[in-house]
Image 1 (cartoon, rainbow, N blue to C red):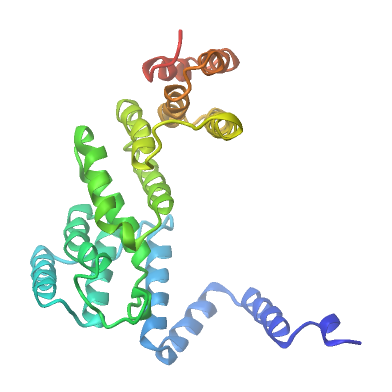
Image 2 (cartoon, one colour; image 1 turned 90 degrees about the vertical axis):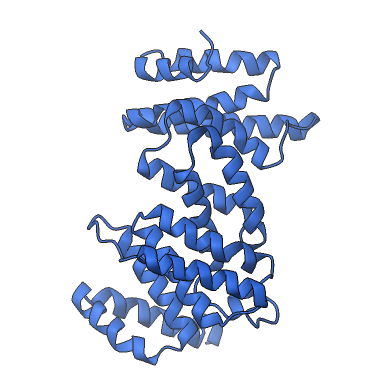
Length: 300
């Protein structure tokens, strides 16, 4: 019998670990985590702490971490300004301050989180503050800089006035582009904004059109690439409408209708004009959705 048949030592240990975790109840798992924490080095502890706080803040318990006070936020801003002037900072201090920004974000104190992230992230992303890393920022920071960049974008989105929202988000994106992947930022903004119920139909019509602008897409290409792109967009919109009507989530009808509008704005072909009409015919028994499609620019 070969080792491959029996499985590698790592695989056997992983299997045993999974089984042991399944055997522990919640109280025993909490005790185990508390016992293990003192064994962790600083970067590993920071990552564990971030994940614990983030997961706990997203549970139905409504628990929220305590964020920084106004005075503490001002202290962080002053620190960032001084670090930018001298061109360097102690990674552990930056780690702590970014974690306070994340705590403010998870506690839904978006203005405070915005001040913290705006003070630190652009300078870090553009290497105006040297943290002593040889290559990647994550070498020296325990916090996930991409997560912080995502949270910064969400704070910008939810605090900006609707008429200014697109331009404010675009400016913030340019500031931290080096710290995070474009589509990861947009995906997280979508998730948080929907959870907050901030996506009103009038705002969504503007926002969905600006997604193309933010992505640098002014229109689909030609030939098969164009056809595939439009088909994928229409399929995504159809699936969204099917999901919200199937679960009767009427407060999300505006979002689904705006996605359909985004498809129509870049496809002036006869097929593109006929598709919204066919969509409305399919969902003719949903008057609330019909109103959203009309209000979002759908065809009569």
